[in-house]
Length: 504
Picture (spheres, rainbow, N blue to C red):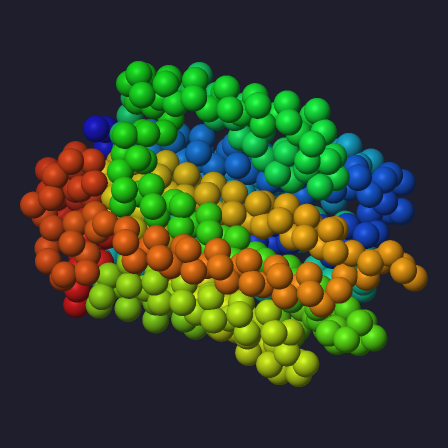
């Protein structure tokens, strides 16, 4: 395994820069949400075309995440992180000056490269930080997506109302440029490299497969779940993925090591990630709608977009404050315990929301409980992932886990659309009955409950809950594989994941 000379930097500065990059990813994802109703008029197009501003970024991000993760493991995580930020910056600037919806869509595709930033950042933190700082850094990095979303929605609404939507894209572009310079200046390149030859055929296969899955999920409600296009794409996915899996098992240095991915510790963690992503996104979307719905509906509060965003700010604050606490719980009792506790809070918060509380304060309390559950779950998931894979495959494994998170949110969108469409009343204009919201929250709670159960039975990669040092573990699940027990390419850090997740 090839190594490069490490360059040490202050851990707090490295963590701040990487977590800021995570916040930028959240801004990219929430950037256009408040503007979707306005874009048809602003860009002289249709609502159906505008919906591609979300779909294009989702598909591009899902494809780029595993590719960038694998390239990061092979050729340098910092290098791939810089490439991602450059693409995000270019896409944002292009979106700011876009004269047509077509050009704006190209910009959103380039912004999809941001999906790889979280996984690459987590991998750099694992490789570069001192042992005692890894858990807290990873927890904050993983939670930055939720924190940024809670802040990004009201910010986007204010900017769009006060000045112009183009300044949103320009602002993200400037932020991306500043982060590119900051990463290049203070973030060291990881000493851990796997080397090898890039699996181009595997990248093409996963691209085709993900497109065939994500397009029906994202557009099924619009195209019709029984339409020839949707059924054809799903049938194509059923053909492509087995062929791709066969190639991955037979090729040396595959894009995704399916033998490692299929190990119960990693497989069940990824399935849990899908369920947690579903439960989190359902509560965020539905609560935003409830806050803005008319009081005449019997459940709404009639808040403006900006006011609704301000009401959701405690969520971001709770996630920021609880991330380091979650890391300490993981160090004390193991990340699996943290994940189970987070799942229980997700269940409780969604069940409380299902009752559609009449007081605004109670809605905020329920959402804050959900946010705390998300912070705990999202802080634990990457720690479980890095325990289950060799250190030379950290970026690829975390990129796959990020993809699972996106599958959860995109599936959630489809389920919400199906439930609300089936129950929408057409008397005197469109109105979603309270029962639809209750059903969505109950489904989210049930999803979180299943995820919690899976987390509870997920086998430990190396005795995480016993407090035992697992230096003696072997096989692909040993985080020290390929490092001769020194970790960090011989820099003397040891394996930060192992030391951090050991019982205090």
